[in-house]
Amino acid sequence: MTSYFLNPAARERSLATGLFDEHEYRQVDAFQVEPTPLRHLRGLASRMSLADVWLKDESSRLGVNAFKILGVSYAISHLLNQKRIGAGSVLICATTGNHGRAVARVAREHKLEARVYVPADTVAARITAIELEGAVVVPVDGNYDEAVRLAAEDAKLHGWIMISDTAWPGYEEIPRLIMAGYTKLMDEAERQWAPEPPPDVVLIQAGVGGLACAVVSWLSHRFGQQRPFTIICEPASAACYLESARAGKPVLLAGPFNTRMAGLASGEVSSTAWSTVVTAADAFVAIDDDPSFQVMRELAQPADGNPAIVAGASGACGLAVLLEVLRDKGLRPVREASGLNANSRVLVINTEGATDPELYAQVVARASCA
Image (tube, rainbow, N blue to C red; front, side):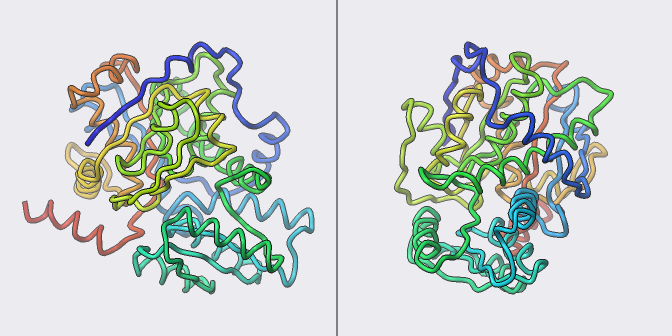
């Protein structure tokens, strides 16, 4: 079931500048990483009567198949430089897969121990990927939000260092560093779309909201009131940002989260990300899994000369929301508010590759058999 919430107040707040200051952006700019590509989906854009669709492809960021390692690498590098992490440090986090693998990979690179807490329904392939990085995986009898709480309790009890991209009162510095690291993605994208003008519409996935906060912060800092129309994208069963925006305050969703978009299956917004996202995002749209599956198939076996792209269910969500906004009569108010038309340039982010290989094979094979 598709649902939406328009946030017209975002355009009335002329002081929406984002979470980070100039010093933080300079620090991120000095952090050198290999950029990921910006793909042009011109064939799809033509079919959908748009000028262009740009897809920032994070499916192979820093040797892993999700964007999460960008923020984790930046944050841990910062903590190492400050000597707040050193020999003997134990890094701990909760994850549905991608963030945990990122923490495990960076810990291994620095010869540190990592412990990763995973919800009970985490797919085996994601657990294996974390274990292959050398981390200890701790199953939790509950969902992602419960895994976060247990990991935080154990970190405090044992003196371990919690590396989380979701924040709560009293734990905000490290999530802020991780989110600042994510803005590197937008720095890269701007250099890649140049000399073209910036996008008119940007769609961003939100789980706990780390990436969404980073992107709306960067857009607000860079363009102010002239920033692109921004749409936050979520699964219908875990739309904590949409429901919180509708209520005007953070809302806790208890679940169950019946979605295969595992990286977005959160019922609780990050306390630091929330205020920034609700200030600057123009719309919130939640969709079922099927549109994401359709996009996974289309990207894997493209038409009209588009490049083949591997996208997991969470990675496909932003493009899926774009297509639903263009096609679904029930989303007409979002389409009209965004101003999408034949001159529009749109930016979406493929946040992950095939992090669940079994699901990916099932979804993409369905196109082959059609």
